[in-house]
Image 1 (cartoon, rainbow, N blue to C red):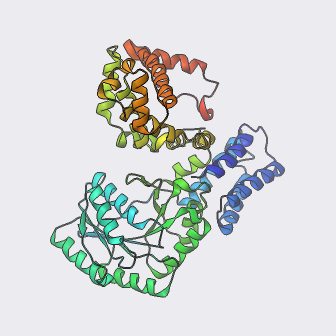
Image 2: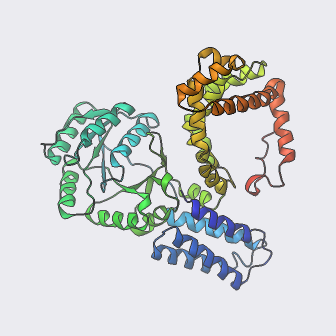
Image 3: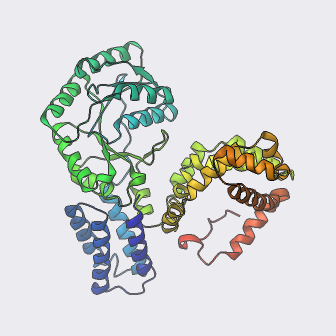
Length: 461
């Protein structure tokens, strides 16, 4: 997400940073570049105009021109105004209600509501430690009820059954009654979508809303629809008392216009952002962190939270102990590391959160780095346990069998084995504090300022 905007604004930021003197003329040129970058990102025109006006007002005052480092001061202003249009601070779900707290999901067809219900249920169960029940009131879309039942099973949420011949309003009432009976903490109600906004659809969802009285009414919208996402959200807000927005498919949106327009146009906070198809790919929306990503400054806080939540720390500790004792880094260890990386959103997902690495992310996508990781995992899965632990036993006939088993070429197997040998040599440096020495030597070889001008984190080594 924000790839195009990130590239354009990162270049602008580089030009601004370190400028000893700013004049009205070069501020004007900078604002023109920012304006074009936002319009190309499909940000709504009124939002762009308001954003540029605010920056211009602040830029020609003492805050920037009168600053000792005017270039850095202008970057700070741009960052603060980006945060402001996206909502200042993260807004979580308000579940302070007599259980069950009801969440109503609304949106157009194809926005990803049903999958988002599953993702939200997973977050509430794992992070908030809530018991969750889900129900589908979508009696129009074929297999919608079955889809939600499958998703509910995957995240281990209670599923309230419904049938296509039932009234959506009666389904919602019955689910609420059952949730109360079972003392469920949260009930999530999935509603039917349409290909466009129509009176019948709005009338039905209003009726559902009135009988279940939700504490949260969330509008789920496809971020790839750009400006239309904000306009559709506004139309829904006029019909329903929305409490927030969830942006889906943000990983496929290179522009990011929806995220920069929704809050300003609707006045409703973006609460979550979907960053992939997997059921753990729903992130809390933090405007300040998103602004940092847009300007190429990374999002280390989210990265740390993701590592804490998704990495198997026991496996990491076991590997560290194993390497410290001088034992070999085998192919099972390599596979574990790759699977951990996939959990973190792949190479591109990791790089996008590192300072100064925004432009590299698009290059990695072009080189299909994450597809290569998937191929490597498939090759290792085609091996026997002995071959994974002792790669040196793998000869010509073994390679043919392994390649056939995963549907790849012998050259692919050879490439993996070569990469493993290189990693094995590097991992030997872990023994006896060698990792610390290796990182220190790497630090000495890094250009001044490191990645993104930030250098190595202070006190890290």
